[in-house]
Image 1: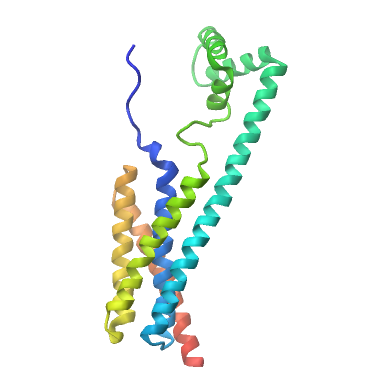
Image 2: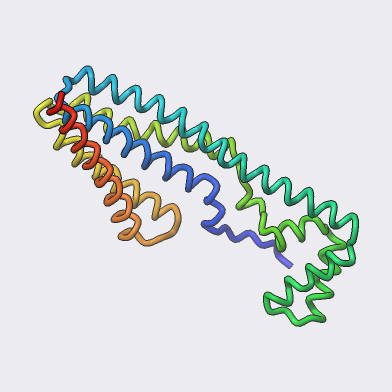
Length: 230
């Protein structure tokens, strides 16, 4: 038989989620920060200082947060695999019956399921239980370093876009131009993420733009209130 070489989009899940999250957060948080400071009446140097500080702090926070959270997932997976290893060593017959039961629940007749379970146990019992009982595979397994690096890099790329607008736009157009440009960046991000994941374009684009625009509007409103009060 020929080996299965078909590639599926789910193989991208390890980095795609972190990439979209990082870029989206970079655009929204940096643009919101710049809009809030601009609405309060700050000058361009203050906008740039706030934007650069937000970019650096956000990238480091995203990297650390992703690493810690995905490491927690990896720890849980490792604990489950260790427990499964112990159970296989203590009672392999029960584990084989359990594996056969999983196959029966998926629609395989009992005789075929028992034979398949016996073959899978003989080939690689731990791999069979890790995949079919724990639902852990090479494709979906936690990858803390990859998630951290991807989030930090895409946050930086996303944050650089509204920061560039703050540096180039005339001061009289900063609030309007920053908001419009950032919404455009979010729309492009939604489209790219949808395309990479094989999904339709409309719903992801609307979702990203709506929540990003809402966050920026709230931050700008608070900045204007603070600026008026001060």
